[in-house]
Image 1: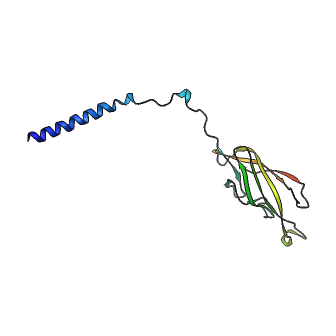
Image 2: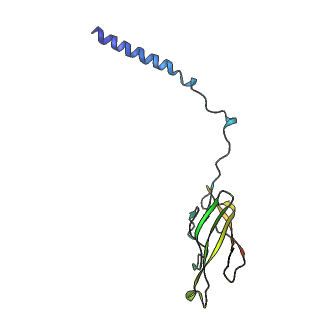
Image 3: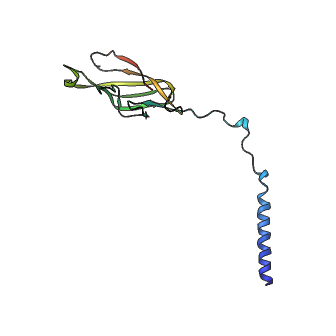
Length: 155
């Protein structure tokens, strides 16, 4: 019986030593002072909004002519995508609509795509969307387009 009492006493002493070694909660190290903590919130992601009002990041393909599908970007390879701008090389697949769009032929042109002018996106205020797209045609272009075309983007 005496052994059982000694075991309980030893266990209680070990527990007391453990708690004392841990110290009171107020002895725990403080969090970093407010002056050293970053007051800035992380920047929201910047996205490209597609025809279906979905946020896209580095899409491989992108529809330009949402109504009829007669112009789209394909094979996009993004060399830059950050909160201020994005740059890609790819192809612009455009219907020549000759003699009319339903009978036209899709032709492919090399294109450099630049996205910029980020804005807050009303649909999702945690995201920003690019507000402008510039297409540069380095080697051939659709007949009715200039070598550099700039378009406002929807949100």
